[in-house]
Image (cartoon, rainbow, N blue to C red):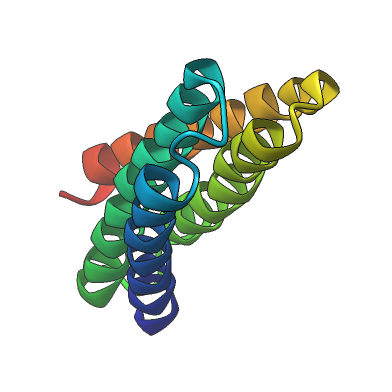
Amino acid sequence: MKIFIILGAINAFLSVALGAFGAHGLEGKLEPKYINIWEKAVKYQMFHATGLFIVGILLGKYPASALLSWSGWLMLVGIILFAGSLYILAVTQISVLGAITPLGGLSFLAAWLLLVIAAVKFM
């Protein structure tokens, strides 16, 4: 429980900080296409930081749930692969990094699916 709440808080913090950096530090330095990519990374990082909070809270109620634990870890992996690859892509403009992004998206999908299964099973 505690680890996912901490990870959620860290990722929410980073999302706000990176969003501010993108809005103020990268403005005028990147093409609008890459600013949009940066903003998408920020948005998905924050969505899944919230997901990590949800998993942490639910683990407080259902502590022995491997489904919830896997959901949280997959959300974290998704943040790293999806948002991380988009942040790097936006700054470096190395398009091959876009090949990593769908792996993060699959991690997100699996994480949310496990959360649905846990809800059906335990609630």
